[in-house]
Amino acid sequence: MDAFTPPPNFAPRSPLVRDCTACGACCSAPDIHALRKPLGVPCVHLRPDCLCAVYAARPAVCRGYQPDWVCGEVAPLPTLEARMRRFLEVYGLDDEARL
Image (tube, rainbow, N blue to C red; front, side):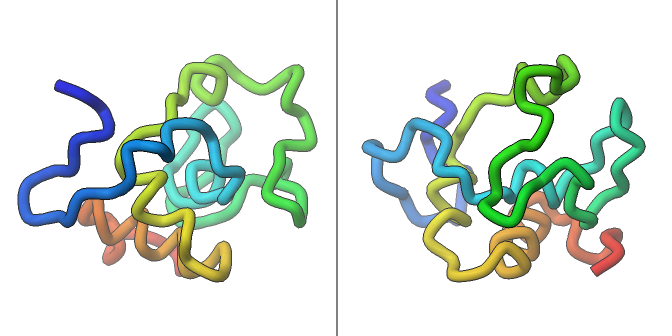
């Protein structure tokens, strides 16, 4: 299955958005155990421009992350908080986050 195929009950997104959009959602919404980063809390290494301050030395879990359908779902939202909330909502984690 193509990682850019939307899950059931979600509208399709542009197939042109297949690269990182630097939206910051993947560095904010999920928990990242290797960095002791809890769910729904931006990574301490996430800069204000939503780029990683330790990109060259980031942990393997971050290196392995690949953009997928959810990136096209959240990237157009106007704020990091909105992108993070939508990311968590898509995965059904919004009630578990510390927002």
